[in-house]
Length: 359
Image (cartoon, rainbow, N blue to C red; front, side, top):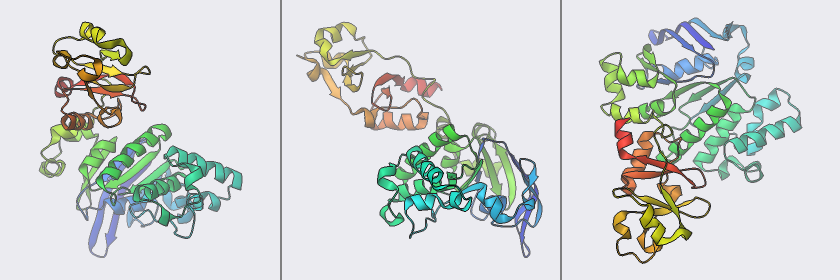
């Protein structure tokens, strides 16, 4: 657990952070957010003493961080930043191994840990271990930066706008990837962003700051339903209904779907289909190939003619997707009902537009 009690940071006559009280439970994903200059990054950097607090106390698991040497403290806490900060003269493997090397891990343990982390972050060790930062894309470099922050298996991870410099598609992909990693590792995370959508999508609790003070600290759902004041209400924006959809998962809402295999033929499709509903066409393994409507069966000579083809990798919805992303996919492809698939495109069920609207 991280506890900040009356923490203040003063620069001359300016108070960057004002008597901040904040408690972060173990395994919690807490996001610090607010307008530029609100003190969020300063607060983050006081936790690993990159910036020293002027007053107040910061404790980790009941121990005052002032009792540690700064370098000792930082080796116990992972740290990832927007600019990544990879050493250009080191390979990916050497970059990830920086802290374990300082901690005097043996070579075999370091090599195993590097491979483990690259695989966790969807980077093939055989391909990436010997690459240099200049050979990586922005998304790959950021993954390596996260791997380096996790290298010594710290209980706490500090992240200062780590995805802020990436393009929207890469950023969204990395957000999903990192949440998957967090579900596995259950680290205590303090994450800074200026993007309220990112905060809503990733946080278990959000701390909204303004002018160095904490305005509201609560779960995303509570902030959307009961903003503390006008500033918070304006900061989260008018589209709170859409933001709420981003907090809800597809899993509890999808239902079983009617389907037919390609080999079963047109007659079986006509017998199985119900007026007003579609029938999903799959191959023998259950991978979705398209959909059939009652109207498309009329006059069709075979299943191919009656089927509207789709690529489940593009048009399929995962049960771990949030409802806002699911709705976006449905609008993009014109679905009133969309297929819910696994990573291999195998049909798990279907999600209807009405289920989203009723959520």
